[in-house]
Length: 391
Image (cartoon, helix red, strand yellow):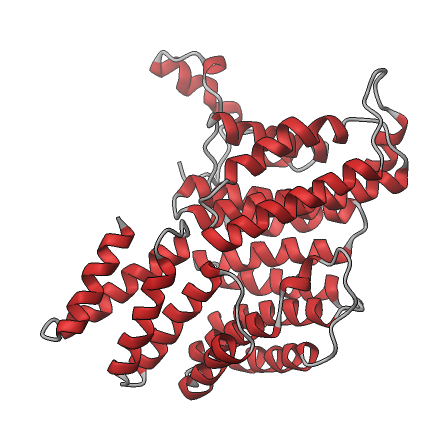
């Protein structure tokens, strides 16, 4: 029930006692076998199970760490030699199509939340991209295709994580991130590998797996260490700083936050297909502000959140809503009740219509914190408006 033990040899006996047919029950595949399946077959199985809702998976700290040993580095080379007769020929046009769809779906999710259009991303993977992954391509095209698919699979994971806080969605997100890492590593793409590990690290922080989050954050930094992309380096260093702060390791958090700040201050790399290019100074300021808040430096946290909103600007409604919610919470902790309510009023204007678990959590957090001000009309109005938006 906890997802930590596999029935193995004793399951048939349980089925016999209960009068069940062992073949009629779709049990999860034992983890050791799952770890060594072909990456393409495994990720397509995951996507199809998601679409058909026929498997229930739980997120676990052990699974999160196990991905570090998963990649099959000969996968692409082997596929160039074993394509079936009649397999579709794949070139750079198909790779460009995947990247275009990732951008379109990602832009929509960033604006409206992961709950919008997630199944479009998964169906695109299982119906459109699947024949290309199983098609005929050169090794160079295969690497590009695996990289582009890694982005798509990572997006599906992020959307599942942002859609809701259920055990099923958490488990799906974790497995999408793991497969994104496998695809990126097999494509020899260190930036995408690090980004997938970042997704796992952030999820471990959210689930309270603090030690695992730090280990994944360290692996994330290792993969990105030699990238010639300051924003990517800042992205991964901030990930480790956040994990360390959640683990109450002030020394490590401060060290890597400083390294992240140094990186984000350098000129951005040229455009292209960088997955970390979205990590702007504004997004860095938001993440840093929340790390500083966790470390107890509320003045610096408020300054960074102010920078994120008013100086650097944020171009996505979902992102701006979350920053406003966080800033309201910081101001309330500082004793600035009027400032908090003013900020939360802006937050509610942004939050309406967004399907994001983070926005829903922020709405609930705000409503709870405002209960102590039940005698203040403005506070009651905010609570009622939040209740309407939360639905």
